[in-house]
Length: 245
Image 1 (cartoon, helix red, strand yellow):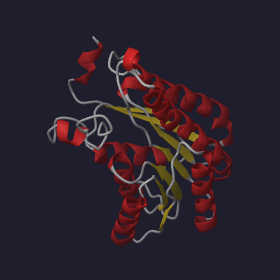
Image 2 (tube, rainbow, N blue to C red):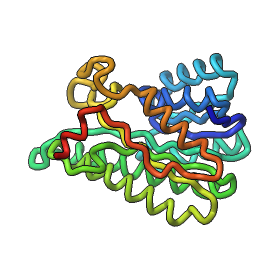
Image 3 (cartoon, rainbow, N blue to C red):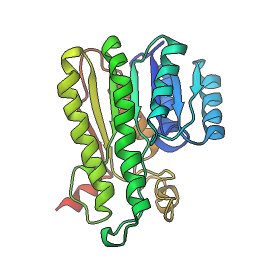
């Protein structure tokens, strides 16, 4: 376990699932946290849990990542409370609809604004501080962002964008000592999918697909590479690669 003692981390989508698990994984390594999501009550619960379990500080910055002010306030909170920023985790994301011909404007814009705009806003706000700390940006991508998918091409396209954006930011900021990593899971047992149907945590049996704690461990690994960068980490269920054949 690599030490992040005293580091400051911002995590979006931190109220449940991968984000909540990441809060525990980074706090266990000693990081102080700024937790971002829309559900303040859920964030307060996560913050209470990590404070009690690991003795770290945790600040709640509730807001919608589709609004640039949310990321600005979260990064400002990290700087004000902890003196800087060492880790930024771009995790918030959602999928809506599926069939392109039937997709509504609302479904399309919800994915674009959350998955794409939200990632840009946090990255833009975080980069100046990550340059100062020689810190790490970790973006949660997806299997869908690596292979063409017939299911929900728009969601897949947002995750292709995440990967392209993250790798290009790595090229731009690497000379300044900033590490940029992408973690690509296949299905994860979380609330994901609940907006339009059955959430993955109910659709899949425990042990059949990736658990949020596994993704969180990959994020923590990427966040704690002194002097190096975990460029890309794939976490697939064992038979998932057959889907590409």
